[in-house]
Length: 255
Ligand code: SAH
Image 1 (cartoon, rainbow, N blue to C red):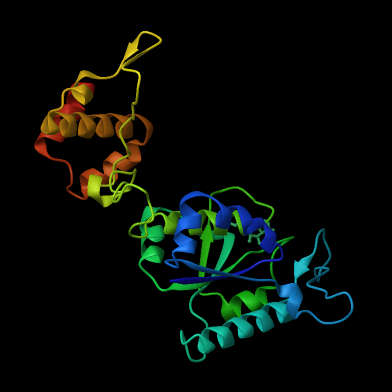
Image 2 (cartoon, rainbow, N blue to C red):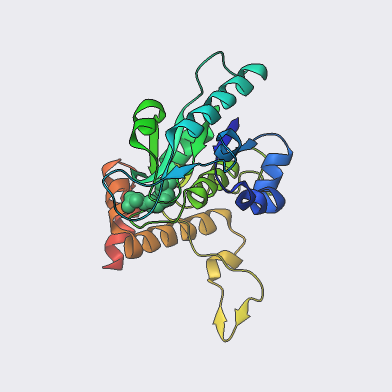
């Protein structure tokens, strides 16, 4: 899969490319990342990429024209590399307007061929460019960032770790929070050595060596964690019919 990121600050993506799980995904070629700076497509000595908002008010607005030229260059580049003929693939804008990023949408991007990711800056982007070119909008949450780059990196990181073989321990994301493999519940607590730390022992079940007992313990801890911190998620899992009679009995025992 290939992601083409449009950003005025391509250097912000360096940490993603240089460390950990994301680096492995990019180095192995499973996730291809290309960075595009609209400034390279801006005109004049000053290579303007922004201007004052019509109607007045504070801040600056990103110009449509350099963005469109940037998008056209991406389209041509994709065609040269055999990805597409004319149109760019989905164009995703990071914006507080968008649907909040969650596991289901990350999974669908992870299963896709990729996208163009557009990072806004300043007050945002000329609406006419958005109307003409943007196909999806994604938000990180109900707060305002100073740019779309951190949101783009959040999506890229989450997508990269879902690629087969990218995590060290194959399949280790299977039991991560929200994964359908654990029915969308939150992850259970983790423990490592020593067995007793500051007088607190690791739960017996985890030391028992009994596969089924460990699995049951983890399931119960996932249920308890989810019920405590995200009752809305328990409700969603319940209405999806994914709680067994034993799960329900355990949840009742917590009350
Ligand atoms: N004036 C805008 C905020 C602009 S912030 C408003 O009030 O809605 C500058 C850029 O940061 C935005 O164009 C967007 O790309 C990015 N951004 C800000 N908040 C975000 C969020 N919650 N999720 C994703 N991107 C966000």
